[in-house]
Amino acid sequence: MTPLIATSTFLQVMFALMLVVPVCILWVAAVVDVIRHGGSGLKIAGVLLLVLIVPILGPLLYFVFRKETATPAEIEAQMMAQADLRRERAGAPIGSSGMH
Image (cartoon, rainbow, N blue to C red; front, side, top):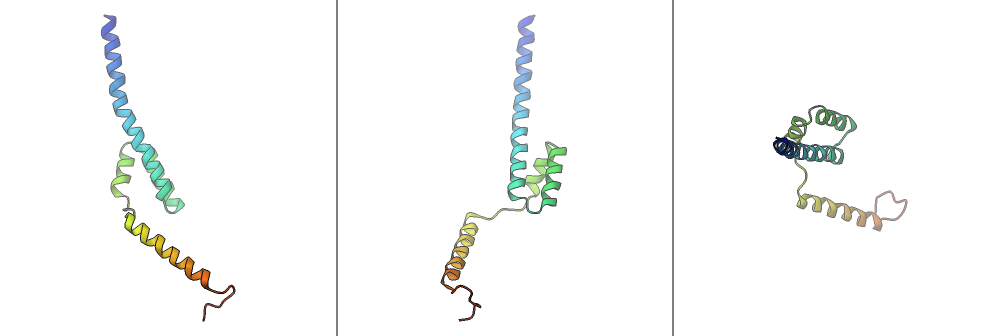
């Protein structure tokens, strides 16, 4: 009878791991994404509270309803615009009123 108990315990542990590991990965991914793209402190706190209080449904709701992030082309365009501004400012005299 002992092998049957060992087999059932092994299968129970494997089944639990197949559920727990993906849920943990989802939870960690949601927390990291909230902190990285959060915005204001109140928004971060609210979303983290939702994710932490409702462990499975909270991260799923966050990923479903979060705003889309910028595409790589949009990010590159923003970086190029910032580089252009830096080049313009580098050519201006120090202490200038901005009028030429």
